[in-house]
Each structure stands twice: as structure tokens, then as C-alpha cells.
Image (cartoon, rainbow, N blue to C red; front, side, top):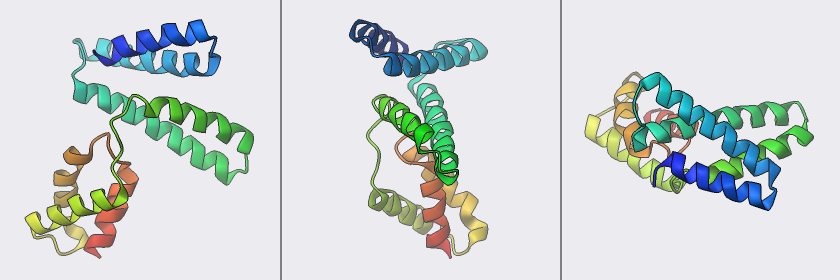
Length: 147
């Protein structure tokens, strides 16, 4: 079942349940996926679907941090609920320890010794954790491992 099929099914269920919050998020994600499909001119692969979902999650995480910095808990609550709905469509997230193990393996494989080699390490790590870990977490772990 493709992401669009899953979104359509969940959208119908949200309508039946009269869950306006979930319906709104599902429609937004569906729209983004369809726009990406139109711009690429073909049905999305699972990697491309994952990229779209990751972008949506990243945008909401950035909004959440800004709302928390501005002491806008009323807005942060809404973003958290959107993130919970989006999490349902992402693969299971890796733990920090699992990401660290992948980073250390990549550092060993590349022979990286300083922050100048960060690009090499990220090039190996990123495809392995795509959609399964936050990019900021990965970058922070690579930096701490290399420094």
C-alpha cells in the first residue's frame, strides 16, 4: 500500500470519526505528497515518500522549538499533536545509541579524524538513517565523535 493510499484510507476514517485535527494534518501531508508527485512527473518511490514525510516532520520540529522559545505553549501543543499523527507514517525511529553505533562505524570505515571529514561520514550515515533519525541528532553525534 502506497503512502497516498494509506493517507486516503486514514482520511476517510478521520472523517467518519469527525477527528478534525487528524483530518487537517492528513490532508496537508496528502497535498504535499501529491504536489511532489506532480513536480517530479511520476509516482513517488518509497524513498521519495520518506523524504516528503521527513521534510514535514522537520518543519514542525522547527516550529515547535520556536514556539517553546517564545513561551507559546498553546501553539506548541498543536504542533506536538501534528507530530504524533505524522509519526504514524514514518518508519520506527532509531535510538540515539543505534545512531551513534552507525556513526562510529562510518568514522572507522572512512578513517575520519577531524571535523574536516564530517562530509565523508555524513555521506555514509545519512542514507542508513534516512527517515529513521533526526538529521540534527545525526549531525551532532558526528560532530561529537569527530571532535
